[in-house]
Picture (cartoon, rainbow, N blue to C red):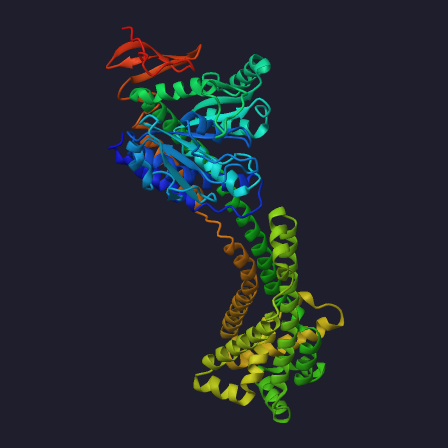
Length: 619
């Protein structure tokens, strides 16, 4: 397995993807899955990947538990000297201490495991350092890591404790008679059972009269939590000596159990492989939950963006309709053009011929050279009012849609400026209208490049022709009612006849369509400029649309590579274990080795002796 790089590569890829997980939206479970992704990435880097490549490294037993359970006192007493400073001020263990046999120092001096912690030979003062202690009395092949409290009042200590437990081959979980039913330890123990981690529980500080009752109750709780097979070691309540050490006789059973484990290379590797395989299997399964959470983030954010885009899209459609249904022929635009062409009597005479219309307009222009510009200015003001109202309405609808969504509500609270149009919007509207009017004049100029059309435009005036084309674009009088209807309709007909007299009816239709399309495009771009404010807020959240698929694919790659390396219960020294059960402190297991079935008894109980035969094999 150590030689097979496919699984290592797949898990490294999975780690890299997990490190990219960002779940910023306040969806249910998002915080938990964000923390889970970070914890899994750490576990892959701290333990799983290094362990896969160094299966022959010493077994690392992490000593964990609640505040005041006596972890450091137990470690010191097992070794016969103080190596980890216990205390009465909470938190007691502020930085981790890793105790190893001197012969195993090279396994822990580098960053093979827990690469994020700084190695030191002296007691640390915080959770960023790892004190290494060489202890000759500790058997080779076994290391003890005294971790901070899992329920520490210091957040950094709690996180480190969880990280260290995830980086261990085995948990030596210490609790006390007073604290064994606390909720926090059982969260960790159930998690360990779920991923088949090797666990031994030390029941510490047990009053002798209550020993049987407390032990039986704890065993019941372990069975209910899926830890019926986990060894349960009991340390009776005792006074400590001047060095803070417990009497040797109360810790001797635990010391013997650890020594037995250390003495059997096959058993150690079995523990390592079982824990490692369980961690990989659980991690792949948990990645699927993170992928679901990431997908929910993408869906929620896309929903918000879709709501905002819909508001501005509807506004653009409304402007397109109102800029062509006669609405803009109201008020000042209608008045200015009407003043220009004269009375309704003039309108009634337009059927006498387009040449008469053109001549009549040319005569009028001689006295009113600026009237075309005045009509354009009136059209600009009318269109400006329409666009500002449309932009404000779209912004209001987009903001309402976001506030109606719990996720969007948080974003609106963080960005209250989204509730109104940007301060630059009115100026942007005016620039857009001027640009479009220039488009119209350029269309007129381009269409009039012919000698005849050019002369007619020159005679009429490019501004008048441009104003007439704008009126034709606004021509459909569906939005004009009452007394305005007849005047507007007649006015539009005059503009239409004027343009036809210069360009011809087919060219007029083409010019009007081109100018209307250009107007709609500029309106869409204008409103998109306001929509981009919402999109910018969404983009800044860095919700990756590809992350769910990346997580799913990385997990699948790891699953396939894992399937090619069936590790559960596999051990080069023992073959494949098919079943096992804890009875009276010993582990009875069945399996096969080279196709030969066997039953083996491994003494795991507190009374086991290192010199004992590690098992009787019956073939």
